[in-house]
Image 1 (cartoon, rainbow, N blue to C red):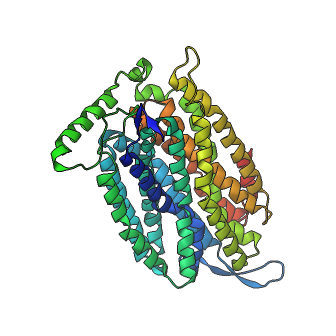
Image 2: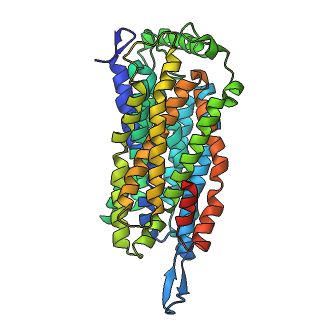
Image 3: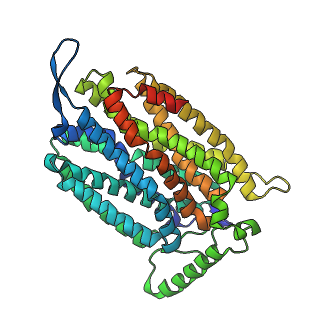
Length: 455
């Protein structure tokens, strides 16, 4: 059995881990299943007013041009992705400053807002998709950030736990596939999202019983407790938690002198953070360009055959579900040294950073091959593109959180993680002119743009 500082892992720790896995798997990243949802939304006539009749220059045949509709669907995802990246720093600040409970309450409010907006939307109110998807993706991000700290409960498998949660976050995109399959069997989009709204009770229960009011410290004290306890023990438990969190903030004896003196400003302007930011920006831009264009790309490569598009969309969603299997690989690579003694003169932080280099290199290699496959306009090759995209994305998000947790002081975790994503939003603003370029100048073909990203 896993052990923490000589004691057995408490049952509560396991319940927190498993319930968080369920939460991440079914709720946090559902917005990333946008490709499946677009298929349903098109059938329901969302943004159909932007489809026009056009004439081909070759044979003067009349056809329906829905590039305007595709552009709006792409922009919905782009707005949502930019919203979550811009807000990552404020989210991180709220998490560091106000704690887990406040962050999760805000997340639950946004989650309810997002699901209700989509529930109330229809073809005439398609514009509700913009705030609806943005609220969903921000809420999922906030829930994921609060879950990342669960890795602190499992010292020897800290990075592995973080990456497992990330895999579940990625795999939750398959919820939109379930919605699509239910839609094909007669269940309306509004009914599915109303059910998701009611599922918010799961987040409430977990926030009360299985999550801390503030933060889970690292290293974890043996006497640390969290969650609601019985009335007799409640006051004592709260006092212990407050004392532990205060030590966690101020820097206890377990922290190194360097971490104690590290300010947020010095962390942001360090070369380590700059190199990490370049890595984040490069990978996230390629990921979001692909996600925003996957449905138009499949439609073009399939010669507008919706049966083929549906088949490939389902395949992509099923592969996304497998993201939970890929993520632990990067975490295990980062934790592989935890069971070996430290080298003479080497600190635990230095050992963690050295161990992360291999996983970071593999993530860059996966992203490179993903861009190569996405650039090739071959329909069958897109199966490989889907696998590489899911694997690359799984490595990226898990490594981002795990690397921030070991490279910088724990009391700056939320702010540093959010700062990297918020700064990357400045680059993501390029999506709007790029999407316009693809739809209007490149006739829906992202080949040249993908090649530029690859370079």
